Length: 175
Image 1 (tube, one colour):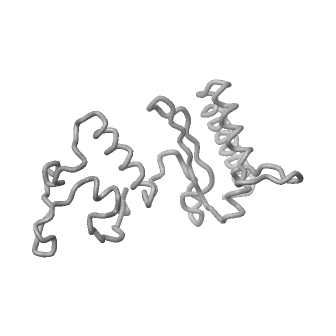
Image 2 (cartoon, rainbow, N blue to C red):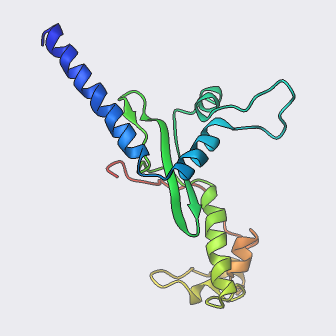
Image 3 (tube, helix red, strand yellow):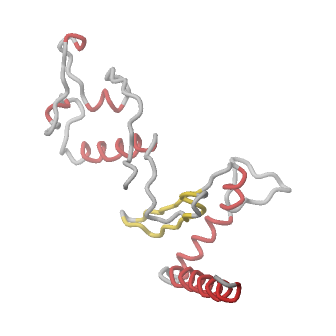
C-alpha cells in the first residue's frame, strides 16, 4: 500500500471516528451533557486542599493505571447516561464501550443485597426462611456439618451462613 493511499484511509477513518463521536454525543440533552461534563471533570478525593483542583476522569485513570472503564448513571430505574473511557484491550487497540463486559467482583454483593431487601420489603420473600424454599434448579445440600441448621437469606446477607466459596471463572472468552 502506498503512502498516498494510506493517508487517504487514515483521513477517512479519522473523520468517521469524529463524526461517530459527535453523533453519539447528540443523543443526550444539553442538561445531561452538562452532568456528564461535571462527572468527567470534577473527580475529588475526600478532601480538596486550597491549592488543588479536581481531577478529570482521564487524569485519575492515568494516576491509578486504569486502562479502561465505563460509567452508567441510573435515574428512576433507567440508564440516564452511559459512557466508556480507555481500552478494553490496549494491546489490540480495542476501545472500551458501554457494552464491554466486566467481572462483577465485590460490587455484586451489594447489588444483590439491595434486590433481596427490596423483595423482602415488598413481602415477596422472607429473610428468615430456609433458602431451599426459593432455590428451584438446585437445592443447598445440607449435610452433617450443618447439624440440621437451615441457611437463611438473613444469614447469607450478614455473612453468618458459614458459606466459604471463593472466586469463580466469570465470563467465557467468547462472550
